[in-house]
Image 1 (cartoon, one colour):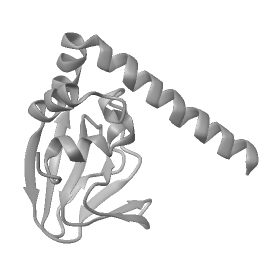
Image 2 (cartoon, rainbow, N blue to C red; image 1 turned 60 degrees about the vertical axis):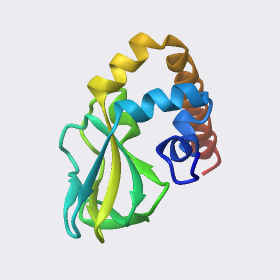
Image 3 (tube, rainbow, N blue to C red; image 1 turned 30 degrees about the vertical axis):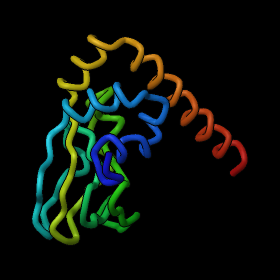
Length: 141
């Protein structure tokens, strides 16, 4: 398997890091690849979110309230919370260059969880770890 495959990239996503190769393959199959041009807004702060994005190639800028927050590149991701709750986006993400994205929609993700309940348990464990880390950070700051 090539290092740049979708499955390999998914293994590096914390949310999916406990999944087996078979489960990651199912997630990869449920996703699409999308190419966006430089300057394209991929997601807009305040809009409802229904997709998770994994950057396969290119660069994006993340901003909140019009202020730069971060830049993301290959292997980095955004929108994972939208797979779970569909709440409004908390940031705008804009392509800084031609960018290739792997996109997993909420509907496809829900179907995957229905057909593979073990994935849901693994994702809950990862989400709990993230919440615990955020809580630890909030307490120490």
